[in-house]
Length: 356
Ligand code: G2I
Image 1 (tube, protein in one colour):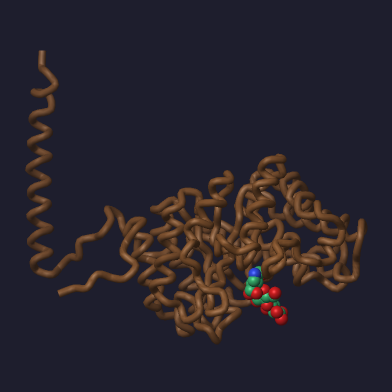
Image 2: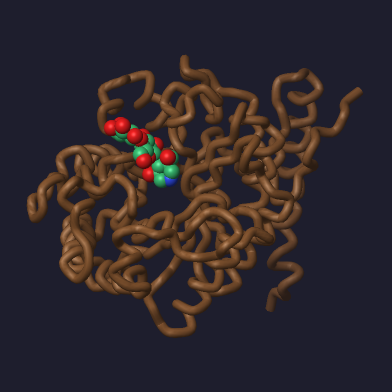
């Protein structure tokens, strides 16, 4: 009878010899300057691949009219594994006349993404802004019914193709009131948001349903607390909500807050996923981008990050140069910081260690 020690003896010593040889080979190559030892066992070389190794996605807002720009699609196809149509799924784009739906541009983006294995975030089903003229002129129960029909028709069209929907966008007021934003939708009754979520769930039971907003990044702000209270209430009452989107448009007037990680983890503790949905940062400081990525990586339910455009020239705030690629498509220092953070673990230093 062979005991376990004898059985394993030969393979173990062979494995040890192989490991020693491999180490010696790496040592020789490293000494010769031929290899850079990786920080992680399988560090990715693109944003999407590296995020995927951390169980997350890395996405970009995409405009249909740029899909014919090969400089644009080269970066999109290489770097990203999630896409959010920047304007093409909005109400004015998908239902320009009441009851007449147009999905051509949104379908182009969805098909571009899905045929390349990228997932799609849907943006957005119900919003006070970018309403077509016919909807802007509606009110009361007719508007409520039209809104619900819109949610149902659009979510049904994309059923099975969109992994997460921004069902309702920007429904809270800025400032210290913590109140809902006044809008024609809000005036149909305070329950318009949960009605939209229920309609979306019925139309596409497989999609994650998100509430999405801006200036909800600082945990101490009244708007953040108001959204938090709504999500907690929805979870308690069984209103179908799966995720909260923090747009995270950071600039001098609305800077990255030191308590951002607390905001992410506090929402996650309610039992929803958290997604950073429209990230851009004025002048793209590498340190701030790195901090945002590390904050997301530190929160298990922070499932992904989307930047709001690819090159600076694609940004809605192009004058702030807030994105990861220059207008000519070169990687910026912020890109390197994001990739390194995705590859390097959850808590690399805020400032790079000094060398020499
Ligand atoms: O404003 C930044 C974002 C804030 N959160 C919600 C997002 O949906 C929003 O995206 C922006 C787009 O990036 C812009 O591209 O939403 C704007 C409209 O609210 C978009 O701008 C519009 C222009 O205002 C229109 O004149 C233009 O026709 O883009 C349209 C399509 O190019």
